[in-house]
Every structure is written in structure tokens, then in C-alpha cells.
Amino acid sequence: MIMIMMDIITINCKGDEPVTTLFTLAEANALIPFVKLEIETLQGIKQKYREKNDELQLLKAYFRKHQPPAGRDPFFTLECEMDFLQMEGNTILKSFELKGAQLKDIDSGLVDFPAILNGHEVLLCWKQGEDCITHYHGRDDGFAGRKKLAED
Image: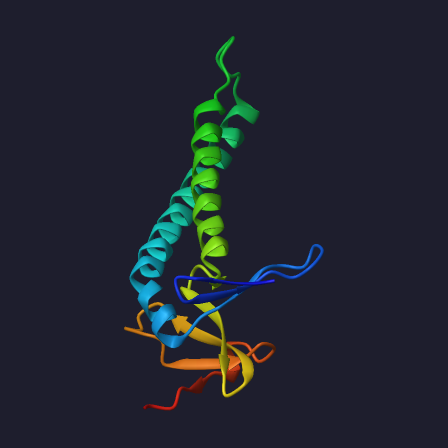
């Protein structure tokens, strides 16, 4: 089944196969401001999670040597904060999935957008720091196989 939604083609495969959204270059570039914001948010969440985890490990090491306060879980608040960060991050990851974009790496801010180029299925490739999408690669080529898009 093929549905056209806001000029973005969505191919809904039978069974449990994933839904593939195909973007034009203009459509993918239109999402870049949102993608930039979501990447930066994810990077911040990831950093906060690491800091909370480091703090939790130090706290656990301390309480292996010392008696925790009676009737109180000394880890509860940190663990709740970490759970919340994880939920927040998962919500953003789901947002990528729902848009049809493929987040490849949070740290480098690497995102692919499935597309058809010259009759072939490719991935339009954007990396944090780039103003717009200027490269693509084959589905199995990865970032190392990036090629510059031909200019019109």
C-alpha cells in the first residue's frame, strides 16, 4: 500500500516489515531544523544520563562501605531521574522513527533519509554541523561511502 502524505511517500509493507518513508531532497532538508534541535536535545540527555550514572556509581560505592540511612533508599532519586532521562530520550528516538528519518549516531549527529535517486533507493545523508543535505550513499555503503549530490 502506498500513501502520499505531505508529498512524502510512505510505503507500508505487508506483515511485520517496517514502513519506509521516501523523501525528496527538499522534504528531507525541510526537516533539518527539527532534526538539529532533536539531536542537540538527545546529546544533552545522553550527557546528563552519563553524569547521573557516574554519580550513582559513586553513591553505590560509598554505601558498600557505609550503612545507608534506615528506611530510605539512597539511590531512589537518582534512579528516577535516570529513568526520566531514558523516557525523554526514547520519545525523541520514536519521533525520528515516526518521521521516517534514520538516526545513525547521536554523538556525531548522523541522520539518513531514505530516497530514490536516479531510480535507485539511496539514503540522503546529513551530519550535524552541515547546513543542509549535500551527500547520499547506498543502503549498505554507510557514511564512508558518501557521495556528493549533483548540483542542479
